[in-house]
Amino acid sequence: MIRDITIGQHFPGNSVLHRLDPRMKIVLTMAYIVLLFVAANPAGLALATVLLAGLYRVAKIPLRIIVKSLKPILPIIVFTVVLNLFFITGESQPLVELGFIKIYSEGIRYAVLMGVRIILLIAGTSLLTYTTSPIALTDAIERLLSPLSKLHLPVHELAMVMTIALRFIPTLIEETDKIMNAQKARGAQLDSGTLQQRMKAMVPILIPLFVSAFRRADELAMAMECRCYRGGEGRTRLKQLRLTTNDWLCCVVCLVLFGAIWCTNFFFTGL
Image (tube, rainbow, N blue to C red; front, top):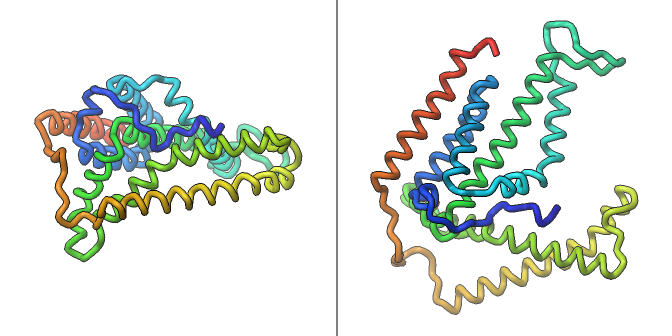
């Protein structure tokens, strides 16, 4: 399960999405996230699913990568679906009634919609990191937050911290997997026993993981200090971010598709 987490990983490529300006990708991703919660009917979410599948096709990201990224959040999806299934009531007669448990058609509808929203949310945000390198992501976040520098906020440092945290997720996942394998080789029972026993078994994993994380942070800080890192003031960049015709064309196409998804709220109100 640990190896299935792909958050923060980057898959190099030369597709249209890989060459797209990272600032445009961040803005469009945020708009897509908002749109997922604005779309209140199955037709809108179906169009959002088709759009996301097309983008993954363009980016040439294999289907197994998408499924792999969704496996760790499966318990969250199931928990959310169950909550909506049992706690959403309706005006009609319940479809299933077993004592105090009542399942309405509205509950089933909301449960399915919420489950699909979470899946599309994870898959959509993962596409951003899959097609954008950490360096480009740092530059894009800094440029987007640059107006806040007038309020004397450390924009460059904030972008650097966010990107470093995102970049170290795969590293910590790999470190966790190594520690778990080492503990299993010593006879630790991590996959069996009661819930309390499993929680106690996690202590020998968390302690060396925290020690390793602090050690890596100290080594990174020392390396940046040795290279005379002093923040973003006076720094130049090898690659300058510039919006091209392809960026604006992709933006227009995505906005038209976003508008079509939003319009489903008016034309498919009965769904």
